[in-house]
Length: 548
Image 1 (cartoon, rainbow, N blue to C red):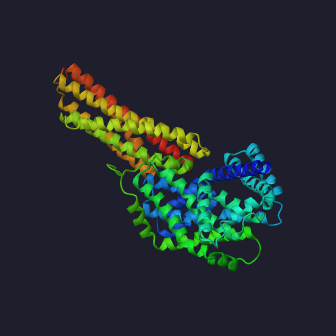
Image 2 (tube, rainbow, N blue to C red):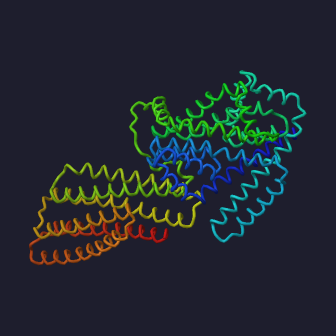
């Protein structure tokens, strides 16, 4: 009972340390991850390298795969581009096995673990910047990983005297077809339960180091581990878009086919002999790490050549659901773990929302000017869609606020919240302009030629400002920011000038009072649109200054 409790405690420390280190590494490297993934779209080799480096960095192939599924779901990566990243993730995850194999050396890993935990704790409390505090959490998690390994290794040593345990693992010996199959099944189920391929490999290495499991019996478990790790991506993509599900399915196909391809060499003992030839010596933990790496490198290399076939197979086994329409979901929950990417997705969604608001205002103004009822339904549709997106962005940003954010990201998030609210109000104002048209039609009001010309002029100014703000948001153009600001000043001048002209027309009895009321409200609404666009462009400018 004591052995079981100690093993579980050590496993808990290991898994918690892995998650703690992985999450914080992902936070401090968010900008780099985005850059690597953008470059990964060039070709399949670069995608594989990017997937390998990202997984080595964040120490979790599941996290890399889930993030890739999210990027596909959000339309940032195509299915084909994502496959190279996933192949690389399988190579990157083997690094953990190499780290674990170091515990088989004469180094004092208990001292290293405690030292890392101590230094990490001090940094989390005493560091004067969030970035340094985060690196403290990385060190803290790293120490927990090795402390958990040391505890599990000490706890597993007595197990070598248990005939039942040794006989159980002996059934996985690769000299038997059934035993090899059982080993693969065991590795698959164990990894699904732990939700961590690294934990499975680490436990197998520790058991092998104490003589509980032989190297021959460990290899099938390593193969099964590669199948079990696919469950995370399958779960993450279950309710996702079509291509996101196909990405997860390609990940599963890649691992399952790879295991089937390697099964016979493992069963016949050829693979074990190859590893022993590559790594002569008695360090079984090292041999297991090599076997895991060789399998994944070989498997990824083969599928890199046949990546188009893998893409076709993923498409074939993942048909569209009945009535499904493929759409881009920029605000994918899987991207929340990489704040820099998630924030950029919000920016893109706000850009789409801003273009909708431009369309709504343009149609509303045209309806008012040309007495056209046809566009009214589209304005209301735009306004409804803007409200929905505003709500979705608000919920997404609220979730993102709960994640670790750098000071720059936190400030940027606040700017995005303000932009979100301003764009939503633009949709409301477009609907107000439609209400002006209803009143104009109801009371059969006519406007003077001067009033019509002035409303057209100020409307054109605000539409020009829309164009400048949209381009500023798309390209981060300082020139367009300045143009938008100048247009806002111009709109204020037009409002004041046209209002005085209106007063003169009233005094000359060339304008009726009811039409004049709508004219003034129209000018005020257009000026309010300019104010909200000014707020948006100011937030864009602030975010650019913060980044620089």
